[in-house]
Amino acid sequence: MAGKDVLKEARKEMNKEANKEVKTINTKAKKKSFGPAFVIIILILIVAGFLVYNYLSGKVYKSAAGTIGNTAGNLYNSGLFCENGGKIYFSNPNDDYTLYSMDMSLGNVKKLYDDYARYINADENYVFYVRENNKKQNPDKNPFALYMNGVFRIRKNGSNLKMLSKKSSGCLLLYDNKLFYQVSEENNKLTLHRVGIDESDEKTVLTDDSKAVSVFDDRIYYAGTLSDQNIHYINMEGKNSVAVETKAYMPIATKEGIYFISCDNGYNLYLTDFEDKERKCIVDKLVSWYNLTSDGRYIFYNSDMGDDSGMFMLDRNTNETVKILEGNYKWLNIAGNYCFFFDFFNERAYAYDYTARKLSAFDPPVDK
Image (cartoon, rainbow, N blue to C red; front, side, top):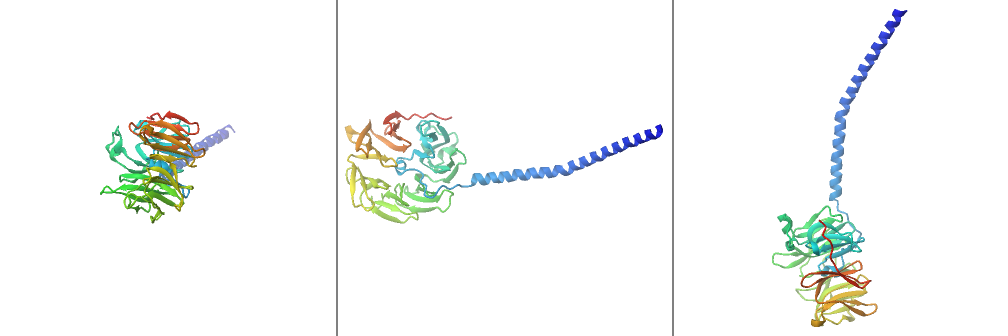
């Protein structure tokens, strides 16, 4: 019995060892067959992720129909400030007018891109602007960035910069997912071009050397400079019509009518209805620059009247005029509760809180 027991135990041990060898062989076989398949799957996922990333980063997101990128008043004043989505996008005068953002209380200042930015527009997805790096006082180390001007699109977080036009450009307006921008031609004339924000359907819509930045009722209003100085409008296809026969400058179309500086009447500020049946003098002083709040209540203007020159605010509800500061000023931009403006000679920047009626220097930090 003892011998049989020993024999049984020996057979059991042999079976155990055999089973271990079989399991080891099977495991190795699985590893050999699993390895290449696993690598292929990983590679497919990497390629798919790369393709999805490229698609999403290259995809152009459109805004709601009829979206306007900035106010006409701001764009007439070089478009240095633009309010959108609870933020103010602006050209920082303390950092060579490069593109920044800040919150509505003028805090949380951040650099978006190191470009000298003019004619800033914004929608729910992007910031659009004209790059003028040739005007920088402190040039970039990259010579290509220094001399590369044109129209650009960038995400609101400062990523995915895209050149939409490499030509030297004047004013820029975003309207209804289209960009209307001036192009400097070889003969030094400016023509107005239109292109989709996705670079589609580019065409010339106006050959008059004029800023066309005021949108109302699906029309873009402007003052002629070549054939006449009348107030014109163009529709989205570029068909041109005369709205008001008068020598005008900086027309802004609103629900009240059309504001304009009258070249026939001492450069006073006027308002006319769309049928031009009634014209009203709003400011009976020489107005060199002006802007108005979106509700039309406050009008800011610089008047160059010798000893009475200064920056003024007119409250149209009370008909009260406030002299904010003596001197001569330019680039009147409105965003949030502020009117930002610049000394005409040294470009010192100011911010006037028109709700609190408080003036302060606009001195934003530089974001390295």
